[in-house]
Length: 239
Image (tube, rainbow, N blue to C red; front, top):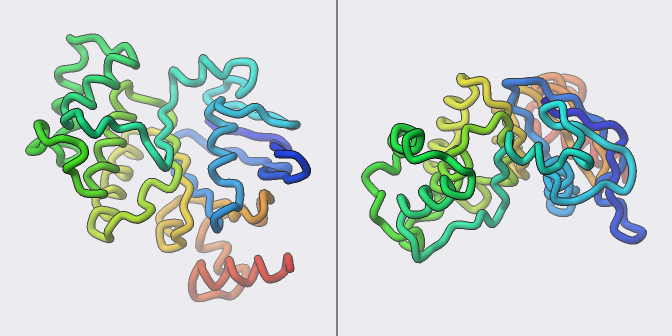
């Protein structure tokens, strides 16, 4: 569902993403892991057609990320770190707004909205203004809006950053339900405990992919008790 070959994006002399090669299968949850400034957000923007690569390329849903960027956007959802919720609209008004943007018909919308509200636990809060939601509830609303058009691939850029542990757990429960529906999830995070939940992870550092494997395999390679210990060990080799 996602493939890249030597994908590179430079800003002046800085290579924010440097020769990234990935292959992510349908129905997989893949975690892109790295500290702030590693290139995670730039990677997301390249794959979702927001940025053009300096060199290299890639495909999402079998479509070229440069030549067919607009077609890709029909099949994906991208929840950025600052997802565009409208704080003066209620929960249901935000959902309907995004349904309009994605062209979801009124007939199709009613059962889908009901399901997503139940799915996310937001059904009791439909009339609450978005600005009055907790951080975790805002993230769940953002995810609900992203899913209104039933995407094939879901891109999530550090969606649980700053969210309390209980809300993070709830968020992951929703993601696991999506996996059962064969949605492909590309997830970036700096939380290594979250990375453990992914089928495979890519360790990104200063724009370079240092490792790409299962969390268990990466820990085993470094003879490490935790993923954090393994990641630190790998990064130290780069110094």
